[in-house]
Length: 495
Picture 1 (cartoon, one colour):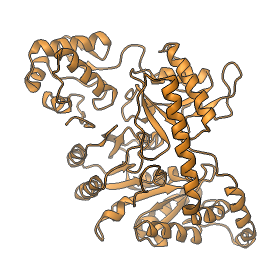
Picture 2 (cartoon, one colour; picture 1 turned 60 degrees about the vertical axis):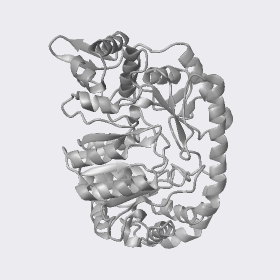
Picture 3 (cartoon, helix red, strand yellow; picture 1 turned 90 degrees about the horizontal axis):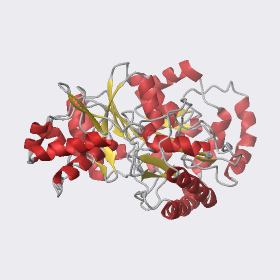
Picture 4 (cartoon, rainbow, N blue to C red; picture 1 turned 30 degrees about the horizontal axis):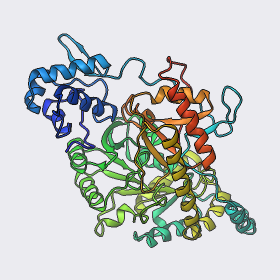
């Protein structure tokens, strides 16, 4: 089965048997050469074959798929004509994107207060997060205010985090099925700092790491900044291919693997328990640190919230698992409170590293976080109801304005991973930015530059009227025609 499989191409070459294994079973449907060309095109767009990779020779691929050489020649001709491969005598046939569809300058770093070229208010669809629940921050501040004077009598340095907050985070893990002691918790300034600290402690420049593909864009930025060699495991609309994941881990023996098993960002997929067990076992066999990002784990819209992945391991079998999370998605991104759960020894090492960067976190933020965390189980249902309604509003808007696009409704999370049908997302994001809509183009989530150019991540975190207007503007930009000519690069960021 080809779904979701990705091939390692360290030498920038894919063999005929490797490519044949990625192709669907009905690849030689009539007319066979067109079906084969479309299958290879899909693999390139989905990032399962990277750009600038040499394809097998025509004769070799024909033997591997059981086709005539004329069929493969016809498929390669179609791919060349449409710009998905290029050939040079003596050097073979290489994957690429059509001229004009390569990534162009990203959308500007402008929040929801930005404006379009005609002065209309901007719509920020680059941020997959909501504003704080009504009244929640005011109530939390009221709870924290009388406790602040006592805290202010101390020097205010708590490198590990406020003891009460560490205890509250540990107790929440325990309630969710993963027994945890406070000394196994480090409070951080959000999950991104947590991830960066873990990478800094465990990896050195040049180390090999593995992530899902696509994956959270800011995590990829952190890995690139650390100058790590990044391999990938594809996550398709139908989820993970664990056979390929196990093979990749076995062949590359990475230092670290980063995964988002709970309502994966950006696809929204939820990893089944059987696959979680296999991932735990595979990373333990290879001596790989497994970093589990639980930032979105509580955004369970159609299924029960999953238990922590590490809770599935036998006693003593999860010491290689590091779990990170935060209050950014459940409560508010402006409250910079996150955490790491790991062995007590690693928490001590992470804290020593953290002190060299920012000494300690904000005491006020942590005091405010305490009642929010303690009251999460009571407050979360209303938050989830709001997200379900907004997800329905986004789907309705897409069906109304862009029926030619396709998507799957995820069982949780904060966004849809939309297939545009053609590799124009960077150009569309650029054109949409001029209309005041800021969007997460697909290429931002790909391990290899240029992949997922046929995708947009569209969050359903804004009110229904803003979602409808945002999709209307996206549709207008799309139907007006893309791509745009290359423009000057501008800062790009998504959350």
